Length: 307
Image (cartoon, rainbow, N blue to C red; front, side):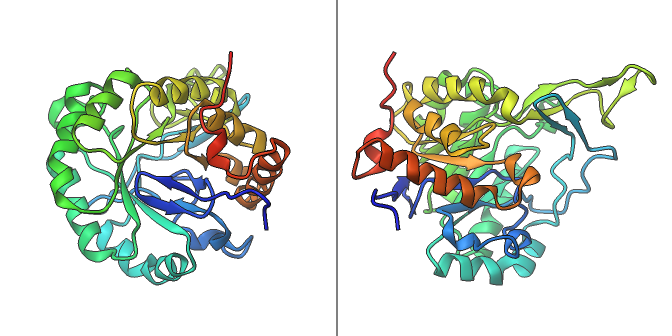
């Protein structure tokens, strides 16, 4: 038991500690249960699901790069109905044990986001809240990410906000963050997840082909952690709603940087691929750091960065 109160409120989602998992890196939670007690975490964010199943992109889907990984998975998922049926019992039990379950919503158009969220709200009563992944390509707008502009992001939030009374979060694309954050806040977003992976390229110089099945992919891992910390700081200073920091959290000190930059919660992503028990280790290290700061509540450290 930590000497510091670790409980936080992430946009109406009550978390017993600030440690969350990044969507797409932690499956649906039960895949990690044999490595550690998942209910020790403050929250998990499940892999994104759409109203209908998505096949995802062809292989190869992942490749290592110095300091991180790149992926082009394409948000393969079984659809909300199958997800709720297959993973619902575990997630209900996890919720009963006090770990918030955040379900990520995927779509290729505003209508698809609404359809998926309607199913989530109906079929997943154990969900503490929902996260809209507005980095999905908008097929109705030529392939640009739905959340790549303030107007595009606001349109998704405006359509989805009336669908659920539960907290509605947004996982933001790493572009135009302060202005898009303000647009989302104005349309009723309860919290923001910052950041999603950054587009990059990896070329096999011997074959002259992409190391993935597509020319570009999403770059993640410790190499982008300083960029993510800067972006969290920018967003936290642009809006009043809380932020969850994501990007290269490999240690408790990485998580602490996000909190000092203004994040209420942090999500562990790539570290779970390296060490499946990383989230609970990072939680312990974060608790030790908070105790070393001489505070009684971790919320006292949020935004405490000084230049």
